[in-house]
Image (cartoon, helix red, strand yellow):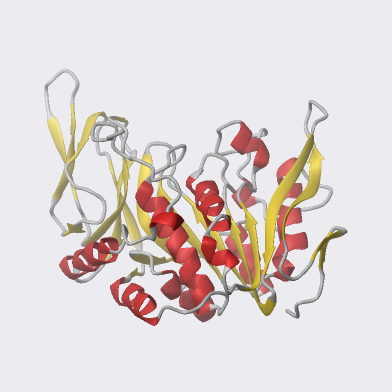
Amino acid sequence: MSMTELEIQGQIIKPGERKLISLPVGVLTTHEPVTMRAWVIRGKTAGPTLMVTGCIHGDEINGAEIIRRLVNSPSLRKRFKGTLIAVPIVNVPAFSNRSRYLPDRRDLNRLFPGSPKGSLGGRLAHVLTSELLPLCDAVVDLHTGAVNRANLPQVRVTAEDRASLEVAQAFGSPVTLTTETQPGTFRAACNEAGIPVILYESGEALRLDTASIRFGKRGVQAVMRHMGMLPKRPAAAKKSAKHAVVCEKGHWERAQVGGIFTALIALGKAVKKGDVLGFVADPFGDYEEEVVSSQTGILIGRTNVGQVDEGDALFHVALARFPSRAEKKIVQSGEGLPDIAEDDDDHPVHYDPYTDVI
């Protein structure tokens, strides 16, 4: 992209400028307008365009916090090339309602590419894919697990998409999971447009946590270095690529009975077939049913709910041939987590309420 004036719906952003623009979407039942707001930050020097999106699901707030810290990072004010488009909250109505879903209970991430005359969700999807996506050279879409279901920091990417795999490798998440793209998702819309895209999953809905935010911010900045938007750090990039664990499939272990659930294994740990991951107990004391792993791999997701029904998803295992090696790599990738400049680490978020120190 040449460093000429950039126009988005009549709003002009010049080289070297940063603007928070508003894109009209529709009107709520209260007659209040719905707008999608996006930061457009441009360097003085020509370069590629990266878009980072958060809160396609309204309760996945880690993404909004990652973007908030990203746009305030000193790195974007020094030797920055190209254009960053950052949308902290795509699904504005769901975010306001602290909900994953739109007011009509539909999932926005099944409505892409959307329609200018469709439902509110369809119009949100249309604005993102028609107004912003065509400007981009790559996309990082930020997500979390569901309510009370935490994810280890991980990247989801389409296996056959080499350009997206390169972006995933640059991001440097502890785990990369190659998955099929579901119709109607934003990732599918990016694939259809031929734009490399990765989906970052970490943490759980409605909760901020330090690991998810730091891995996310660091990963986006690593992608920007990979694209030539920020000065490269060869040692850091090499370290991230070395420690990434790539898994081709994932498997959910489910409750065989209902009752009170206790987990016995933490995220990022190696799992072998036959290992006991936890147990479900009869609240009246008659039995304890072990949850046994049917696969070998790494634990990348887990429910935090203490009460489960038969069939509930409990543990998400990413299949890996050598889980102990994978666990070691994950530990190594996490060792770089605290290594963030003090002036670039905006308000650390504590995760464990029992160990927080004021």
